[in-house]
Amino acid sequence: MSDENRVQDLRAEIDVINQQLLDLLSRRAQIVSEIGALHTALGADHYDPEREAQMLTALEARNKGPFSNETIKALFREIFRASLALEEQQARAKIRVQRKSPDERTIIRLPDGTEIGNSVFSVIAGPCAVESYEQMDEVAEALSQRGVKVIRGMAYKPRTSPYEFQGLGEEGLQIARQVANKYGMFVVSEIMDKSQIDLFLDYADIFWVGARNMQNSFLLRALGKVNKPVILKRGLAATLEEFLYAAEYIVSSGNPNVILMERGIRTFEKWTRNTLDIGGVTVLKLESHLPVIVDISHSAGRRDIAKPLARVARASGADGLMVEVHPNPPVAMSDAKQQLSIPEFHAMMDEIVQLA
Ligand code: PEP
Ligand code: MN
Figure (cartoon, rainbow, N blue to C red):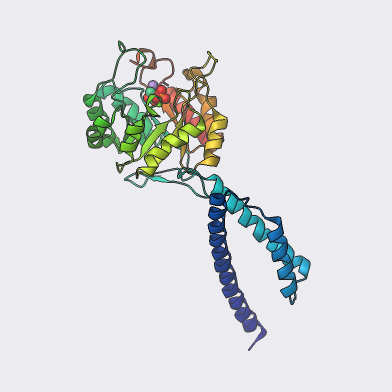
């Protein structure tokens, strides 16, 4: 056999051994997580330095070379470190929506194969509320030119005052559906009550739970039974933990396809409508495997800072942003101060495309 062939044979052997080592490491990690779960149940510490020292001594005693004892110990210490990290991570993840490993992620798949949460920055947009067919058509045309796939088709509006425009109701859903079909887009619409689920199933592709309903556990549980994705907005004054527990209601009831949306929280600040919690966005990305979208409209309440906020959203590691767009914002029936005109929307898109 030529030396070259011999090298090839030996390399094939190495490949097999690599595979065996990988299998053994994975098996070891499984056992470690089982021990971790028992430690958690017993309330015991995950790190046991004495046990680690014993294992290293035993390995040293069995080592016949050619690796030195120091090298063997260094290699195994690395394995122990990774195992401890795994045990601790799993112990910290108490609920389903929390990450159990750094690479765990939920990817939302829409019927045409569009994905949210797959590291491509998604833009969800549309007017605050559906006002007319013409209004939706004009906005949808602009959005579709920029590849936006999900359009706001808001037909029931949770307004502060009962005397203000409350949305077009079912007619609004019909308009949104028609326009979305025309441009090959998907409708997301805010549901106010679980009694509306059947109605929404006829028109919407994605359910939307607004800030005011974030802790409506009956609605959240009911949305756990539908087989369409749900966008869940953070409550006006909800902590991140409360936010994740709200998502847990949906996921634990059977629907894993939840998208989190940060929309700003109430603070003492008056120059913005809410305070965009961008630190919260990065913590959510760290803590949870669910996609996170930044609402740059309701968090600011003003259109003049949309471009820098879009840049911030993009740079934050979020999975996308949500922005309100209206053909003639000053006369909009709701949120007139924050909706972007169509030229402003294009300018915002140019800004984030540059960042890519
Ligand atoms: C909305 O996005 O349509 C909305 C009403 O916002 P929020 O629920 O965050 O107030
Ligand atoms: Mn709005």
